[in-house]
Amino acid sequence: MTQLGMTLFSLTPQWREGADAVGLLEQVAAAGCGPAVELIGHQAWRGFPTVATEDERAFRGAVERLDLVPVALGVYTDLFRHPGRPRTVEQAFDDVAPQLAAAARLGFPTVRATLGMEPQLLHRIAAEAERIGVVLTFEVQGATSPDAPAVVELADLQQRTGSPFLGLTIDFSLTTPALPAALGTALRRLGLPAPGVRAVHEAWDQDGPIGPRIGAALAVVAGHPREAELVPLVAGVLGRCGRTAPGEWSELLPLVRHAHAKLWDTDVEAVRGPHGEWLRALSAVGYQGAVLSEWGGHELLERDEADAMAVSVAHVALLAELAGDRTAATA
Amino acid sequence: MTMTEGILHSDAVSVRAGRLHLAVHLPWYRSLPVSCLEAVEVTVDGARAPLRSVSTGGFTGPLADAVGSAAWWDLRDALDVALDVPAAFGVTHQVGLALAVRIPYIQQAPGVPLVQRATAQIEGTVR
Image 1 (cartoon, rainbow over the protein chains, first blue to last red):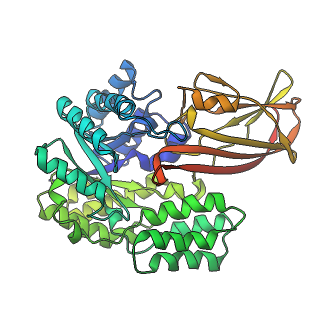
Image 2 (cartoon, one colour; image 1 turned 90 degrees about the horizontal axis):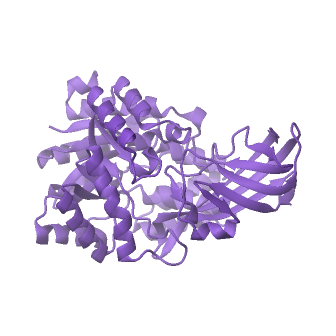
Image 3 (cartoon, chains in turn brown, green; image 1 turned 135 degrees about the horizontal axis):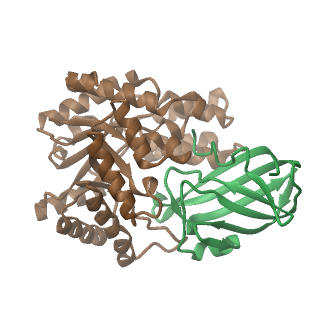
């Protein structure tokens, strides 16, 4: 049966204010947002992938004491650590391999990485993951399509190797019926007038591939005094709001090892439809992994406009209701 | 809390050896290599404030040297920006900040990493 829970990425405001892993795990458990938890290595531990023995012991002790289940760790390939010259395959491998080892030491059976790893590096990292017994997943989210080259490459590699240690993290943002209301809030805060906010929505509402739709939205903010901040905001959010249906991913669903139920707004009812669809689609293929609430609204809303934990509580309850898990719904 | 919110706390302005210092927090959700620091521009009372050095995670040096650093800017730590501006305890200044950090794992186009830009203004009393 699917385990529900949350990624502690949702609590980014607390991390940025200096919270520590054990303290946040205690809050998650007290709020009934477990049992499954995901953390991001470079968010949770100073000096990651080096994790001090006492921090490792404290983390393992906390999840055991709190009846939480560490299901996935976010890891990163920082290819552009230096401007203009991406890391070589060897350098990137040396960056990522210790993160996999840290995941294993901390008790995470799975890691989640950013989709699009260069093939030679992908092959090496996949072999390393299998060697140490950690499942390597790549996140498909937003406007990614099932036939995207990076998705096809990954699926081909998994098929060729038959490795149970390679798969996908599926993010429910693949199915986003409407842009989040919180985007409008953020755009207005940056000084985009109402007609501009409307035009950004109209650009996203157009038919066609995401690239030209983002281009049309960026044309709206071109020349604005805060264009430099508006551009990544508009491109980043529109690119993470996809319009594929779960059925379009059916051939790839057997590769799913981990799942994010993404939302942006504080009103969790906004995602009832698509998140219900995704839970049914995963259930239909016998998915046994976790489904984690992931709230990204902290990127758009200020501290006094949203309470990350309150949104997470409401969303985990919604997921439990949709999954038909009454125990978790009332936890 | 948006990424920009909280990059300058109310107690961000301080004085050391008669010079103004500014404590700047990361406009991102995870720690980043110091080498990803692309730009730090500060104004004090409307005038451009020259940078003497930046310091965090064991790195201290001119901004231009950050690119060669292997240190990390931890999410929990402030970047200490030393300014070539005389300062005195208890004086209040209008401080403006424009910050740019490269996000080393997100490409906005093939081979072009995303640069996160954030601006903030505070009225800060030197402590």
